[in-house]
Image 1: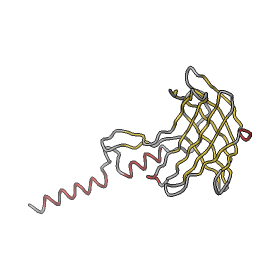
Image 2 (image 1 turned 135 degrees about the horizontal axis):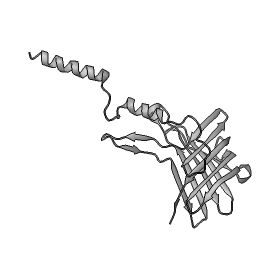
Image 3 (image 1 turned 90 degrees about the horizontal axis):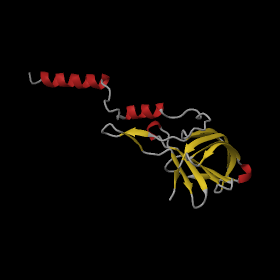
Length: 200
């Protein structure tokens, strides 16, 4: 009888391992599947409704990269959801009279994507623009930042309203790396539709 009980328990455990689902969805496989299912594969639509979206294609010497501002939601051990990387950092800087928009692509190491990307837009009340794109392939590699000059930026405003703290537009530009290897990138099909907070 002593031998029979452990064998029964072992059969139950092995059977569950083969067929039971992770009730909290926190196993490595479940997390990877969730992140894979929520990883953008195309640009967001062009809108002007304050939907907090941003996307563009980044063209480099080695090919085209899809950038979509998006955080990564990971479940914690008690089953609650958490976003460990916020997709946006948008504010109106009253003292300097500009709206600063920063969208982020957050790393997804669970599916082998260690990239960290950010796209920034500063729109001043004088209608001047500053735009940049930063790219860090992995934690061990250096961050590369590409800056666009005013003359290389094409910008089409769609909506800007201080009362609802929202701004949207379309853009494209050529940007240069100020550090080695001093390469350039082309940003095309850019679009954003965001809300923003106010700084003190």
